[in-house]
Length: 120
Image 1 (cartoon, rainbow, N blue to C red):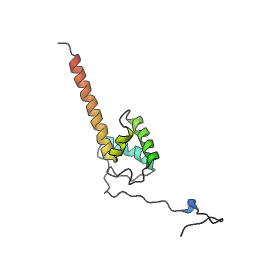
Image 2: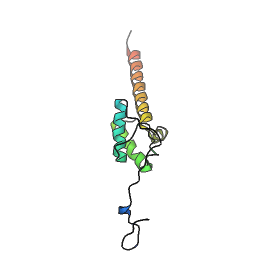
Image 3: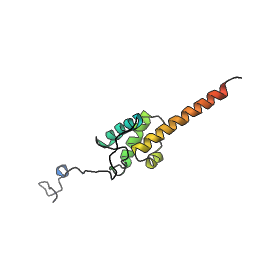
């Protein structure tokens, strides 16, 4: 039965909050990158119990939330994510792997650049 206001409309304020849960088993962050990405997800979802394998969209993610998350991620890790990369990396674990891989690639590119700049 839906709660109604005095004028017969659905009283949205009196509706219970939905309990959206992921279909995956809870896994806590395993490294610093996962921990920092988790903090950003907690800001977006206003939720303290998110595992690193939970899917963004199964938790109730939508287009507004993904843009919010992208902005937070790109503030913390500049130029790491495009919107399509968030869709293909829809878990904290995958986003952390993406960040680590991009950082490793940047380090390797810098090493190669330094090697070519050495004057023999």
